[in-house]
Image (cartoon, rainbow, N blue to C red):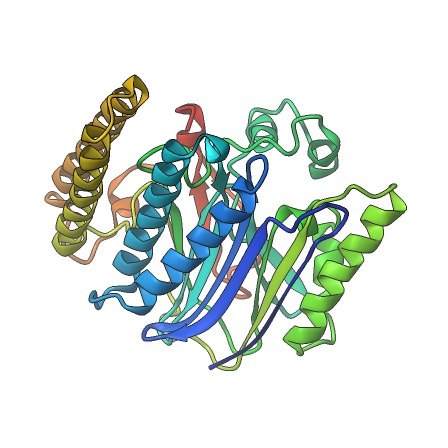
Length: 364
């Protein structure tokens, strides 16, 4: 169904804190890029924990719903990084981004947290399928910055507003995408897209259908640019996926912010509640073993996060009950000024996606 290749290099740093993985799972083909952060060994450990748990959890998922499997796996990885950081002072504050693509026969599922990216390329045209959870993206959205070039040179260009491991529950953005035979999905850490423009990434795909060549050129070109600027540049990671046939589902893509699926699905909601409840129960046991006041404060924070999740789930259920079964929540909720179009592709070329950015105003 796909051809693929991934590369990760140290760049100008003393350690490669990126971690990547790609493999076949029961749902299809899974690719993951994680970019760790945190002093000492924290960044590398966080990205590797995320890779290990997400691979294992999706690979061994008892669910028949890939969206449910992805959502639960990322939440589980997030909680484990959060818990590990609390238990080790040297790892406190560690975290990681995640960009994930699961290519199934029906569709491509793309999920992300942080500023690692997923692009889709077709016939020499590129569209960004994820938008960064970062300070500079918020500034672009608010009109403070007016271009990607400005954003890349801004002093806060490396500051992200969302990552795995910072809180016991994390907001995950997920998209459902159609694809054609000959399409590419390109996943990368910011060490690649921070050095290469989208036009340069597009050029790597023109006249080239070999994922290995694309991935190697992407990280090497990013590294070369970093060296030209004097070194000290970021780790660079990329995974290139070539689709050998079109998806069964050719409907317009849907985007979910903070919830795993736009359509109301009782099994997903119940599964999510049970999964989060299990995590918080495990966390409670850990907290009871220590008299450290920080654990109590974190437990209270976790409780508040779960209350927020319950409010979101109750709202989702209330809306869904008023909508016919085959109607998406997007069709039920009027568009407002918080929704921004992210595709300039013609409708007959590639299905555009939209991304709501309300979550950027919550401080997450």
